[in-house]
Image 1: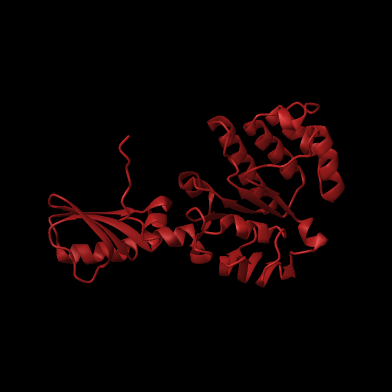
Image 2 (image 1 turned 180 degrees about the vertical axis):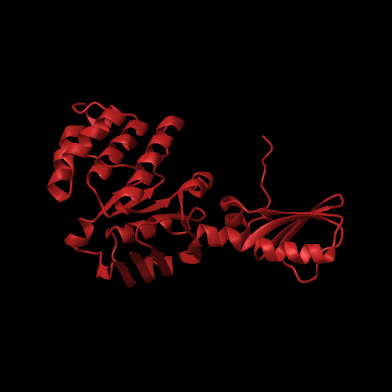
Length: 293
């Protein structure tokens, strides 16, 4: 289990993290989402032991991560901008990773070489962004980490390679109970692979729970006719006689109340992760600004 307990971080007078609490269960695929500037990247740098918290703790199974070599050997991270030594080849980085990760699996590295097909002797700085991301995945998966932390992991990959990478990650989770934390703005992809989600804003955790619980506790209702007074409506919009409501409650509970009111028409629909994100952040009424050129 990976945890952040009341973590606060200042950069000068700016408070990047404000008592952040996060719990990533062992073997989970955890999606960390939030608007730009929410503090996601700062949180990741704490989880990987790059930053020391001003207050609070970052723990891997009750062991502090910062300045703890034994804990960091169990973690691997692929950042939004991947880093390799300036003149390094993929073969050079394989040797480097094998020297710092005790469980580095060279046999797996060469099996993954058949999947990614990258040039072992070519300088990584001459690779395209997508090829560099593939190299980072080949190295990270071969390190056999207990926890894999990813920041916009498939940015720059083509659709076929994106599917290949997700397949490899999910196989790791299924076979080795690897814990995966993914920070991404692509909520549609996260919805397909994550079982837990945390929504951050202004350095705090707004909402954290399993995706099934999150989607099961809020629903979308389309209704024409009488609306029950006891519905907990978070948002409503109208298109002619048809109303679209965002309602706090389970689908079964909401449907039972609607049936009792007996409107002319109603339908209860699940919310997507993107819709949950928008409504939890209160951004549904934010106007999209346009500029006439």
